[in-house]
Length: 93
Image (cartoon, rainbow, N blue to C red):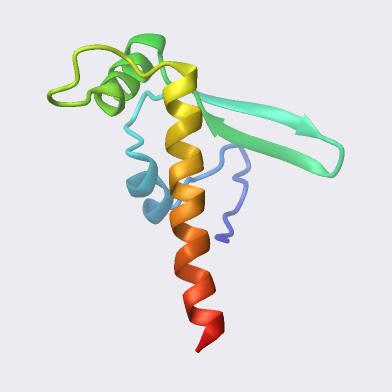
């Protein structure tokens, strides 16, 4: 957690460490919301930028079609079984 001070003009400086971590630039929009115990400040990314960041995470080289729900369920089952086998082996020792 980082603290900052409110200026006489009602301005707040976002510390450099936070600006760097969130890749904030001058002119970026921030959303300020009133909360029951104070307020929160969040970044507001434009839709195009959000879609571009998401699109890169969806690419699967060599895969021609998205996985079906059944394939996802099977992958989760396989991973859970493998994890169970791995952890059981540890307990037996």
